[in-house]
Structure formats: C-alpha cells, structure tokens
Image (cartoon, rainbow, N blue to C red):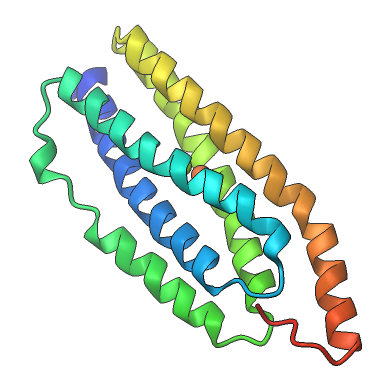
Amino acid sequence: MTSARDSLAAWLRDAHAMEGQAETLLSAQIERLQNYPEALPRLRSHLEETKAQRQALERCLEKLGENTSTLKDGTMKMAANLQGWMHALSGDEVLKNTLASAAFEQFEAASYRMLVCAAKIAGEPEIARTCEHIMEQEVSMADWVWSELEPLTEKYLQREMAGMEAKR
Ligand code: MG
Ligand code: FE
C-alpha cells in the first residue's frame, strides 16, 4: 500500500526535476534573446523565482524526512537543452520558445495544484501552503506568457516584413 505521504514525496521530487528543467529553459532563453529585450525583466524575475522554488521544494522534502542528496534532475535538464537546440535550428526560434513556455508554465501550475491537494490529504498544511504560493507564481507567469503571444508575434512579423532579423 502506498500512502498519500509517499505519493507527495514522489511528486515533490518530480517537481524539483521540473524546476531544474525550468531553470535550464529560462537561462537559455535569456541568453539567446537579442531583439526582444522588453521580455527580459519578466524572464529574469521568473528565473529567480524558479531558483527559490527549487530550494523551497528541498525544504518540503526535508520536512518529510526525505534524503535530498539523491535528487536526480539530470534527465530533465538534458531534455531542456535538447529542446533549446531544436528551437535554435528553426527560423522563428523566439516564437517556438514562447509556445513551449506557454505549455510549460501551464504544466507547472497544474503540477502544483495537484501537490496542494496531495499535501492536504497527507496532513501537511505547511507544504500545501508552500505549493500554493508556488502555484500562484506559475499561474502569474502562465498569464504573462499568454498575454505576450500576440505582441510578440506582431513584432516578429513586422521585423520580418521590414527585412530585419526576427529569429531571436
Ligand atoms: Mg517553476
Ligand atoms: Fe515556471
């Protein structure tokens, strides 16, 4: 039999790996962006949030008595790097990255919604509060990416039509 606490611990580990992927994706986007500097402040602030989220998840795992030295984030980071390189090969890299971010931030928000529920059932209200706080950050980022899709596409097409570099 698996307890809610065991599932909670496993999902916190998954979330930690997911945030490792988020950190890699955001860092690469910030580094490669050239012609869309207006997006940088929000990307940078979410990168800082992401680092703090990983630390908060580690504290949640420690609270459950879990060994945090065995966290394995390598595979997810590799997947993020691979995706970054795939998008770099496309002529509209900035848009491909934004599409991926739109999906990724929603995925993160959904993961924390699940974690909040699991933490409550496992009798861990403090972990539930932490996950709820992170969920709000992800929802806010997801909303921002959603709202950026239109102006970004407009700017991309305008640059392209004017013969300016639009790719990134
Ligand atoms: Mg995150
Ligand atoms: Fe995020």
